[in-house]
Length: 332
Image (cartoon, helix red, strand yellow):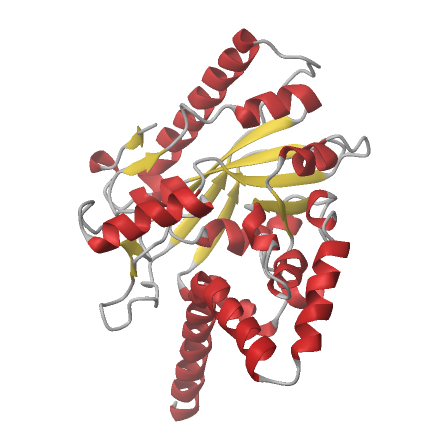
């Protein structure tokens, strides 16, 4: 009995450590910058930074050419306990043909895309088991590839650039089997991360429809129930110093500067242990149109919006604690 107790405590510690390590990634850019500056100006190891910078420029096309996944990084042992911390589940509603390419249109963004990264980046997910023959890539902002050393870690995890060239390169692969996981609302949607109603940005996001039409890939609506619960955001007043800093940083980098609140104010970056369920909807087949018109884009955008709403309504009663009080609200 005592042995089982210690085993459970150790298991909980590993799960907590994995969650803390994950949320540490929020500040990885800051720590990387400080580390590189320190190495460059205060140590004799500055050639390492110089070599890393040269490699970054030499290797600058990789984020736009399918990336460079490294299984050893994706399957780092601590990530084995990450899904169990919350826990996180992945639900499939339809089979996907591995001969086709897909865009997984994922909502909501949340603070750090916890569900999405757990399923489509980290190596202990059931995604490959549920969708055999498919290779998953997650699109991210180009700024993540402008930091020496950090960029190689981001690439190793399976991220690719969210640029049009990058998406086209993967989706035009005639052999099929590529999945691009795209956070449709982007970092701007992170600012709506609050428990209760799900507020997403969709109406003004039409670029993914044009890409799907141009390449003929299928769109798959994906909804992450519970994504907004582990971490919420502290919202500073717009006329405050923090509010001005947040707005300036978002305009400068296209990244929302978040002030997350997790289990408590003292443990602000430790996420709450709340369950999350990601439901992958049925694919929407899109015809290939070399030069789609605005009418074409509007039509398939409305078709996608209907499919996403239907996916939410069909599953909220099963995966939401208070379904009658929880709505999907499109805010932009």
